[in-house]
Length: 409
Image 1 (cartoon, rainbow, N blue to C red):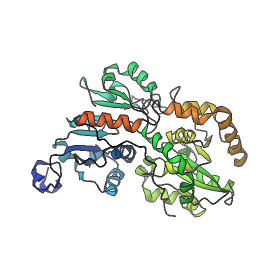
Image 2 (spheres, helix red, strand yellow):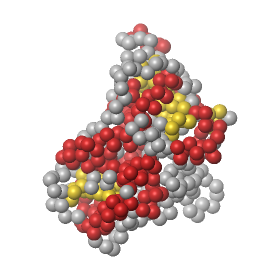
Image 3 (tube, rainbow, N blue to C red):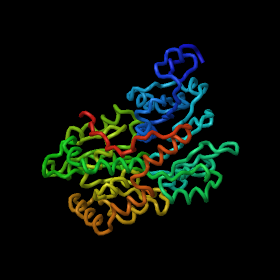
Image 4 (cartoon, rainbow, N blue to C red):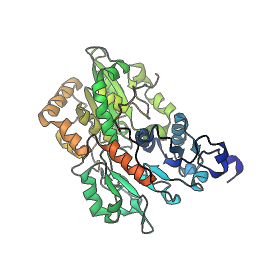
């Protein structure tokens, strides 16, 4: 490592004489991409107001990662260590939303899932593959992901549901001692946001009497946006602007891979026509709290939408490798599919009837989390256990998400 690649670090021995707060425990947050980052930033309020803790960040394996990960970290104002420097530093706790970089660090590690948790998808390979290739959309709970050279890659593994614990027992029983069923902190924050629905609606520009329709897509060619490039234009064309406010939420990987400029360019006509587009870092939960209807695919945002009480209309995305019993798999069986050859407003009305008939909000909430409302408490307990510190006396409320700041047209 060259001298110019180092940064002044509040956790580095060489820079201790600059410190104002001394003797703190060090926490490293691994952010290889914005998807992991957004979930880890749900955990960081659990460390707020604790003067015994210093948090720093890094982009693991930065030479082979999304450039959007670096931009995400810079936007939050934390100390960002170059990956070679982080690898040579000592930490008291590592927070990770993926397994990238874990094998190069020796500190106690908490691994948390992003999206709707581990165990959402069956192992999948692209069709017509002549030679073996790495699996796509694995469960995330298999030994290939959780073990290296006979040892666990994380000291604590946060699971959102008891279903995942049972799956882990089948796929990688060696990891059971590290497993902690914590519930879903993203769902808890969304639930805490629901009483503030009117504030989110106003921030999205929805007038009195307008219904909010959120159109969401995960990534990959099989996703709603991958299969239907005109997805947003079609919805805007079908829904009268005086009755509906249309909001877009695209998976962060779409923004990270194709670039923010390109996403705005692709959606330029839709933005001019009134689309309210959420940025990739945050805003999707605020949109779901405001939503009357959600048009989505097999991504986890669609499941969160159902849990928030929105009426869900599914885009037809055949072949998604969903595991039975997961929220998205249950939604796929119990919600209507959008027909592009039929008018959209009656299909939204049918989605509302399906929601009410099937009791979908309660059903999906129960599938997303086995510990509703408890994720913050259980995650904080785990983090402080790994840090070797007693927990603070202050409570652990689930905080509502911030007001959305749409992407400028």
